[in-house]
Length: 120
Image (cartoon, rainbow, N blue to C red; front, side):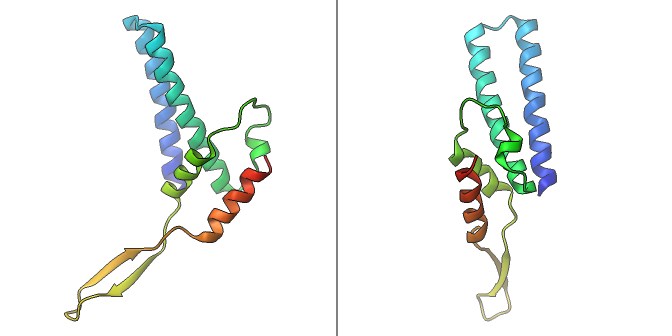
């Protein structure tokens, strides 16, 4: 799953550079460009922090000199999106049809995330 979040981080950073190039070429209004760039950078930061958490890096190493804490709920959503969920087999119908039901995210992982954000 780390490969998927790495790919998403690369895509977001590429989108930022494309937006910068487009604004220079097309002469976009500064306010539109700044708003879009701000949204992309915040999303990129959330993915980067989720990636660091999934690799076991402490928050203080990831952002040693930041003035504003991120939106932890958004980072948690990214973690929930990229962490693999357990699948269990259930035989729901007597004719042998098997359905896969995804379980909820591991409670231990969520507790680890809560501990990770308590000590930045």
